[in-house]
Length: 343
Image 1 (tube, rainbow, N blue to C red):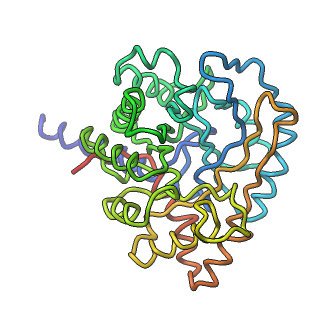
Image 2: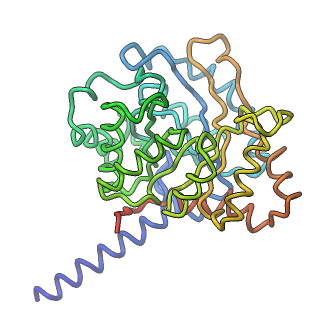
């Protein structure tokens, strides 16, 4: 009887893991990953730069934000986008109620996040994170995953963290990375890490490996700030290489400018030549209705990938299958919920 019980337990566990591997967590609940369709993996709709200890969500004007944001989302949808990952973390303007209104108005599948943002000189790290242990921080994020965000039933679909680019990782940034690793191992959520330069990516990889997390659970966000050599090296180890600042690119700028469009093209072409397109993610990091700025400030559209980048890639011989891989297949694989332990 005990043997039969054990077999049954592992059968059920396997069935649960199989289901999770095929699902993503949207703000409206779990959804089969195959329904994501064309996906933008790093966008924003709303931000509040006030700072963790001064931010007041009660002051946000969601009605004004909706009026500004909706036309940009609908323009994005006209290019076939079905799903977006809204990457604004807690204490910097994460706004699940606004996201629910936008999802209802557009029909978009929207994923939000848990985690803390350690970039921008740690201004958006709450005071309790300095006092608490790694496990205590991870427990806060797991509470959101298991029960919902800010008194809602909306659950995070990924972990969003950020680290500063002026050091090899501060003490608080390292704590945040470790908390993300431990949260992943108990939730299966993918870690999206605002990073940039090579050295910060490499240090995070060391921490993830120490914590027992495989690199295919980690997205090197803003990897356009790194080098071809390190992008290739980490992609070969399974990391997701996210080239995601395209919303702020001037298409007319020459290659050689680190933000120029052709630098993105060249990085993608190089990853293709090394057989690593299956590890690449693309997005704009655009939007940004900003609380406290009249009219929400300058709002960047979510369209340059479709109007400029993809046409250039097609001219360079990229097939429909390869482009679908970048925009449909890779996001689905990256964000399907499943625990990815280091072997």
